[in-house]
Length: 271
Image: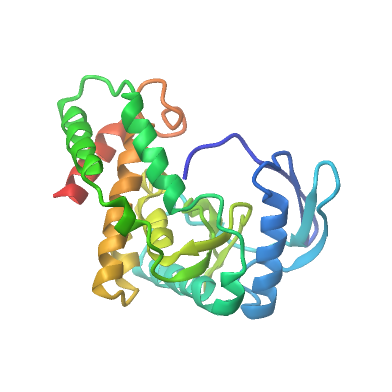
């Protein structure tokens, strides 16, 4: 979720992509290689095909096939796009056997980390400017977060292989289907968390349109799962708002007015 400096460098030669990991503190190269190999076995075509890797190199690298397609970030998406996106997410969550998923390390961005991030941001009281709607959203979000039953929320419903990054730039549309890239944070995750992460990622607020409601409507979610998705959406929406204030880590990468729009979105989710 959180904005980070680039974790990798990309070199493209013909139909191959080499990804060199300048950051390795979260086991990024190992996570990427593991996920690509699992998907090549259980859902070929959903992600780049793994070709080679040297995880002990400095920096470590992974070589994979190059995927054709246009990132969904910034696109005006239609129901066709969101339906294809849902199929890709469903394949990611369902293809790898549960027994295999159970043995995976947790994704580096996970439910506990997300809640802790929101709580830390709330306690830091970041400068959010003087807009009254933003101030109201901050107060409403803080009250909700203080009363959140984290024990209930953090109980995993359906363990899945998760991408752990809802950035729409990771979803490539080739005219027929959506495929996935960038698995450096991947691992064992929670289905409700993963769906909420995509629905509320700040990349969906950039120019272009993305209908999170349409995406989530493609999934037949039991009531308990749908409620957890809603709670995680609130966690993410609140955290993003707190990072969009003057001097905030997400401020400069988003167009003017994003903070105010995010405040309105949070209030809608809390309503």
